[in-house]
Length: 552
Image (cartoon, rainbow, N blue to C red; front, side, top):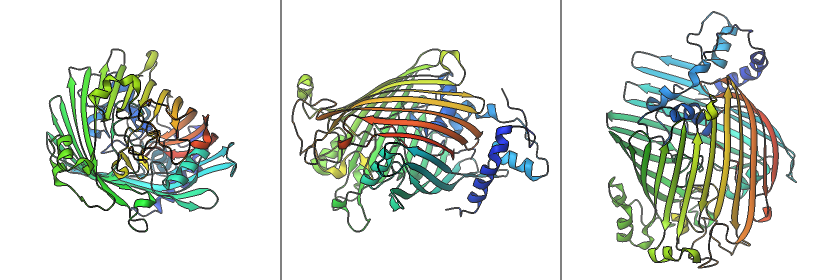
């Protein structure tokens, strides 16, 4: 159903939003440059525009490899349902404002063989936190821009720059203070009372030299999997420099990734905010078997050391080798290899089942003694199902997912080569030693959107700093609390319950400008050993261009 063109006074809610939105547009236009989107933004809100249609269609897209390319998935976007076929460009400020606030990119330029868009990236929020002993109000003040463009048919680019000050819900605030990083963003600096000052920067240039190849060079994140979580590689951590090469032939897609990452623990800091460096090499082979079944094989290796003795090992530049033999050839301490399998099956009526297995370390002899819980079996797994246009209701999306990781998974004898970056896990935000069940729903009716989620988890906590039951991936598995009897939840058992409900009005689907009101709750049995409990209600105006996970 296409939306009708509105006169400048047509929609009452739009009237009330004009003053606020005008302030945003004016503030953003004062910022220096530091979207038709060339690369679909890596966040759940943006994925929601495509999920329902992709689950209801036959295609050859490898949907478990994200971020998606716009050229591949744009036919499945439902944003066009909310945008007029043609937009009247009458003279006058009111018409210009209606178009920019509700229907168009903020700024756009287009020629015969190029286009460029500039859109705001904002997040203004105010809330109340009932559980924090230090403060009652929360807020967020983020201002920035996202610039995207294309030159010719083969070259695209984007850049995002956002500056923020914020005081979060209690559990997120504690996480930012202890890790020195605002989750998913950047290093934090203290700001006023219990608040953070931080930035977000990402960018990418992409080149498609031929039909079979696509190259990306930038600073950003990756995601592998069909789930809300990924047990292989997720968008949980801070952006990092990377080079990504995709090769697509028929029903096969092969992805190579090389990235530079950092360990920011004070004990390995080389100088004041000069952090120890490590390197990631990864490849992923995805095969579509018929129209319904997808199978993917993953292998990645992290290598480096505190003194940077190894440097960048050219052995890992080869795009087709197996990393495990090379790891052994350079020495047992030369790297940390993670292997995995990702698979999904598309049933009829928009239902897709999916799963993952991540293998960090294991021995066949110990697999036979699984019931004894040997520490060497470092595995993680995921099972899930999602349903597009569920129950026959258009734009209703449902998901149920189970995730688990055994103790010490993603860790390593040398902490620097763990599966982490900037004090955050590269896979699941809970790290390891947990079981989690989550249920989510998302529904859109016109420009109104509602979503709800419930997450419950069993965590294994360490009773003190010296203990190591395998949940904290920033502890060496050579110093552990037990050799056997280890299962997800070992150590001090703590049950986590998180739920969230949110309603939003989508002012501009083009760059996801939305007015939102929500409530979230986090409770844990033993908050003294983890993050504090939190009860948080909030409202705000934001463009959904990047993800902040608060559900852990």
